[in-house]
Length: 368
Image (tube, rainbow, N blue to C red; front, side, top):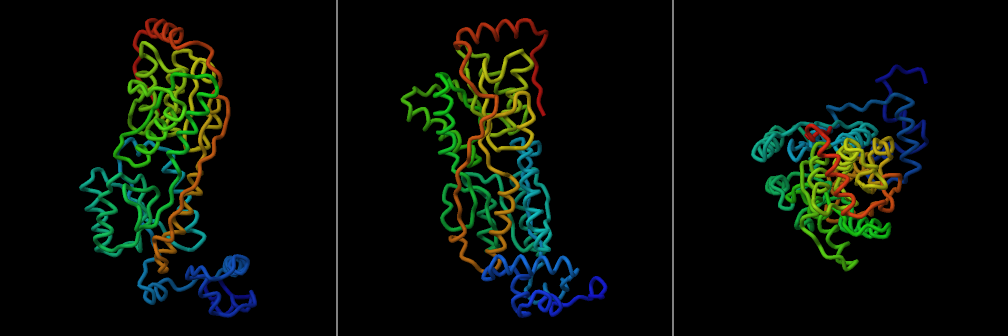
């Protein structure tokens, strides 16, 4: 077809694929009642022919901006959390396939977050929002409900019954993590988590406690340490836990970023991760595979999660009942080399760490 880019019409796409014009239109407008093979053929033809629908005309017709929004809270160490980068990349990739845009901005305080959401809503800058790092009682979701503005949450809240969300079964994952570590021979298991206003952090802490209860192991509050979601936070938490008179021989971490910091502490003081100390993370970030040693972790693809959340928001915008767009999936344990049977008792580990700390001019803290 000897048309220049931009002159291809929706009729040309329909003829090329051999379907009705209305079928092409429904695919381009993200209706979900078209079979996947037909949808793929149409999207392939759109790309090959260079069809570009008139954004202005489409937006006037539908009252949309063809832009989704996400406001990232800068806090809890989230600015240094690699999971969010992977998650946003997954959103952007999914939207790019659909010819939609993503507006990303940040908020530096809870009040600034609400002000930012209200400003973007008032100016109709986006069609809907993706809410991530959900809190137990989330003021962002309360704000969006009040304005009756479309949104999807990555994660749940105390009461997630009436909105669309995608989440991982954090409680089950961390209970499984404790059981796995115990099966390796560890009896003192430390937990490195995040501040408990974050719903996933509360669930993962609860899962840790549930795992101990399932095994009949007495819970020791000294073995829990909460820090910011960063490598620095993980480093500090590992230092605090492993400096206890009877330290844990294994560390179960709420995120890979925290686990990476814990590994850095162990390496700084000559502890062999996977034998002297077991470290397990959660997120399945690609960087974990290239650590020394490679990180054992619970995998949840951040990119896949971003794509799934983005597509759920499109469904909400297309009129689907948000309560029908709730999904809870299972994390998968990926074993690498950072976990193993303990090579020493808590008492002998304590003596080793004390000796190493005493030989350091200043232990300090570090992390990414």
